[in-house]
Length: 564
Ligand code: WTA
Image (cartoon, rainbow, N blue to C red; front, side, top):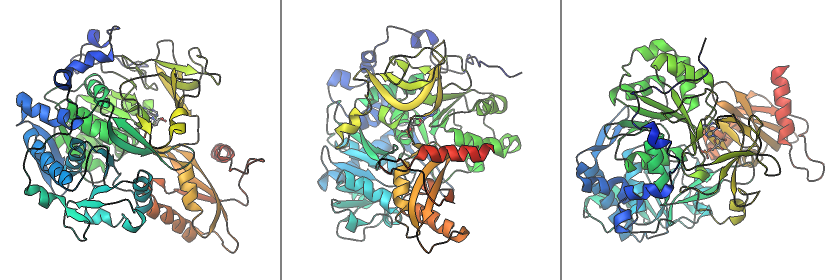
């Protein structure tokens, strides 16, 4: 019989229970861990890198990079110098406080250096996912009229400058090919290794991530430097980081997890951080875990399910004995996967819950608490959670309703770019409760059980996909007259994108056309947004009054097809 509660594994974690469960905890208690507590001078880049050099950790490895072709390491001193040189280049070309600097680069230390250089000069950094295609890139930069981009010539093929008129300079990590291109690596070599940090206020803009909901185009969520308070602290409590850890977060910084828990949280804690260049493969990932001697590993259920599917024989070929703490985020973590980790790796997988908008983890299975497989855990100290009914009233245990977080916490978004109504929409029952858009219930111990979304947002492999964006793209294809897009349940990816379409006159559906439509979306937006399945209907279900496609009906149709 499998246990229904997995107890903490004494000795495997760093943080002491008594301290974590201290009810008197206030977020202000964390402030004293930052240099600005004494100096009043705030900058995320400084806290992540310079502070550690000043504390005598300059020779410690900050970044260690693995790919098929290359291995690189940067000490905190080396990282600091390179960031300063890049920051000097940015400054010299006019980048200043409050400007948007987009970073479109692969998973590589240069991506980290680019982000910190932008932050150090006070700019708001916008990391773009490496697989974004031309329209995804264009829409994001255009929305906030970004003037600066850091990229390389390969990625530039997906940057259609003529359609992004606000772009002033493009900094390239390889060569420059046009007048407005600046070879940042080459120019940085000529720069001083020190820079005047742009000191900011805790509430000044730090980063922007575009994120999808069920309607409209992705919205720009802006976060502030104050995020570091919660990101540092969750790095300690939830990631359980200690000085000699080697930490690997598998997400690209274009997703919020990759920025917050791939870049900021580990470096705020001064911990050696692994970057893996290249795509997922079970062999490559096990190899990174073994070679880098990863001790703390943050990934996602789809990846764990893929590793599980590869079997134990493969896993047994690697020495994973350095691993001591595993975490998951982004999509429901099935109990099956937790038991897989427990039985094959001898470790619990700790689920964590948060959103782009929340800026840091809010609900988690802490290493010091029992895990109930199927639950995302409990709110971390300093966070209060409730489940509300349609009128905004609290529901008792085991009743499903809207997952709500007591407003406010240090890392909540600063604003939705140019969209105050959208910001307000997270507070439908007034200022007291932030409504996530997730459905959940609590048990009698306050453990949170995720039950789905209250809107049509799709979650495929932990990536958030807005059906509207995919539908809009589909109908740009000449064969597609109308489109309705839903998430279809999937064993490995949680959900896959499924499109229902009606065809224009004169078109008939076949495998070739299906593939053409799929590639059309993939080529414009990104691979993860392209429908894996397309079904043709004579007519789409619609609301009588407004004629809007009823995605709910499509979902019902799909589940009827699965169960029949
Ligand atoms: C979902 C990712 C189940 C949820 C950090 C949320 C989860 C959305 C979990 C945010 C989890 C996140 N279990 N679902 N542990 N964590 N989600 O903005 O629906 O990309 O609202 O942030 O992912 O996705 P986002």
